[in-house]
Length: 344
Image 1 (cartoon, rainbow, N blue to C red):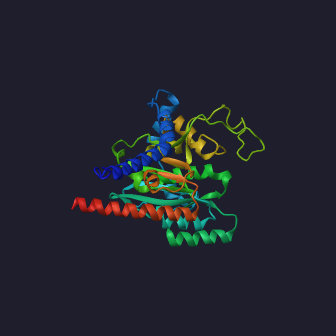
Image 2: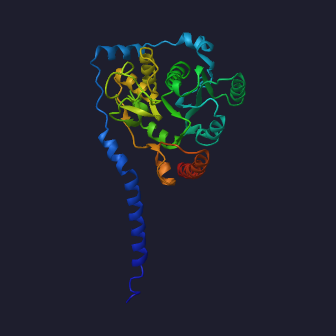
Image 3: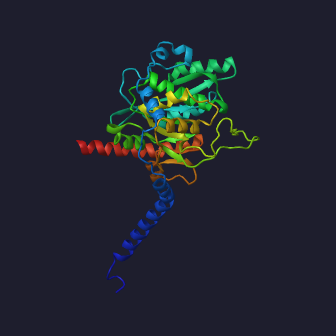
């Protein structure tokens, strides 16, 4: 009798494994999905006269002078990087000027992707100035080799991250105005272009007022004068910041880059970079959208299915980044081959 139903045990094992897989992903993403539901954006309304004025100024923004006099604004401009190409996603990574080794790791891994489903992605690095002439000579050699650097005329350092973000917006609207979407990230981040662009392709016909990332809700200014992130009341008087996306990685549409750039001229650059962008967005009537697929700090062991699903993750070492990329790129290559065979 014991052998009358030989399929029971294998089926039970399959059900057990399936249940555990579902439970794992529910625990992994459940809290994020709840957070995403609670942070859903409200519909945009533009009744404030100041907001309407900002949006009109952004629409009429002219950048001919900057384009013609790039050397006044940039040490290295990569002004021809976009050329006449139709860039779908412009990706600009905020990088420490002296961390060329990390840039090389990124070039070999996730930034090595240049097309997804026939749509182009361009990756560049945003830098400030180093403190020594020898270091600047190294940067010029790196630029000559790769041609993917944007360098502003300010000292590189944590105190100037907001200036770097303003420079990113300035460069995007000046030298790549046809890019549909702009991804701003930093060198500690990993970005899955295949996953992200798959999502953005669904938005390409309605690419306006997009500001999406990991939203920080009801955050408060740091009022501790002994802390490096101290924000005095004279710089920001309100008790809470408006909602904003984490600086680790967020995506905006081209029109939002123009709006942020227009508003940035009216604000000081002393606020934290992510907060600064959030304030600019609010003044322009742009509401941030939360997505749990922009992950925060790495807090779980590597799981290939997890990283295939995410848009970005943060805090991976060079070794971890290489390992993650090797795993998911093999999977993505196999998937691309399967899709190609289906199309044939």
